[in-house]
Image 1: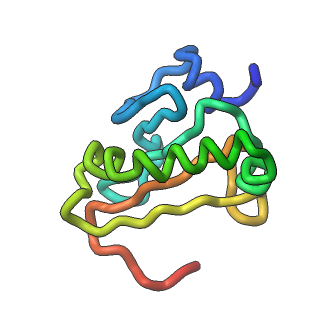
Image 2: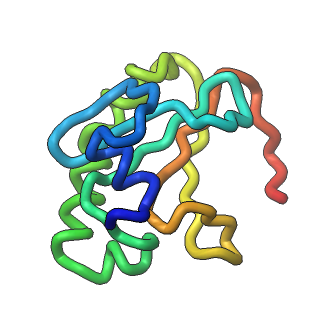
Image 3: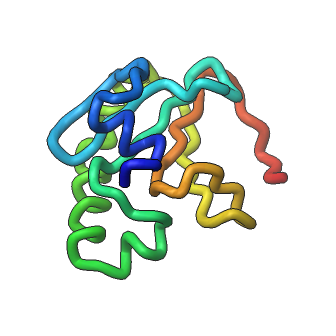
Length: 116
């Protein structure tokens, strides 16, 4: 999608601080981090939200690919020996601000156990 910020990052049109990339996904630092480590795991294929993604065979394959490389992403983020939080905000009321599926990998400090 031409107007999608994350699609523009995937294409290289918009620069980002990439920490990991393969043929299925790109991982880059969040520009408004809420913790010392805050990166976004973004599928290269555009899916508007998580429900749309998992409703297709292709989307489920991409999600499975993400889980397979999650240990590599965690290592790339420097969190392999620490705890972390993996979050997906789905749709506007769920807090999603960019309509392209992505996961927040957050860590680098002790995180609150309370949810907002």
